[in-house]
Structure formats: structure tokens, C-alpha cells
Image 1 (cartoon, rainbow, N blue to C red):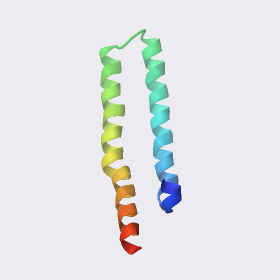
Image 2: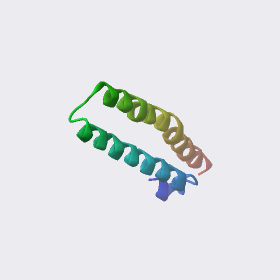
Image 3: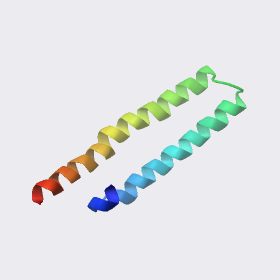
Length: 75
């Protein structure tokens, strides 16, 4: 969708998704190393995943929606 509408922040948006994938991979490694969900793992999920989703949706995804809305208004 971002490519279709010519969203100027596409590269940066993809980079944020790549960072998230890396964080998830690291969490998976932690889960395996600790042989299950420890308190440390649970906190890391909250700090990394939950916070990422909140910041990403509120920031990046909202800016995409705003861009699309403005573009539609401009015709």
C-alpha cells in the first residue's frame, strides 16, 4: 500500500520492521536459552514487543494513514 501511494517514508518504515524482526529473533533466542518464559523474558517481551507496537502504530502507521488521507483530499 505504501508503495502504491508513493509514501515518502517507506524506506524508514521498512527499517523499523527489520528492527522489530531482529528483536523478535533475540527474544526467541532468550526463550530457548532460558528453557521457557522466565520473568526476565516476560519483561523483555513487554519492553520490546508491546512498546514497539504502541510506538509503531501510534507513530509510523498513523503517519502513513495521514499521508494517504491528505493525498486523497488533493485528488
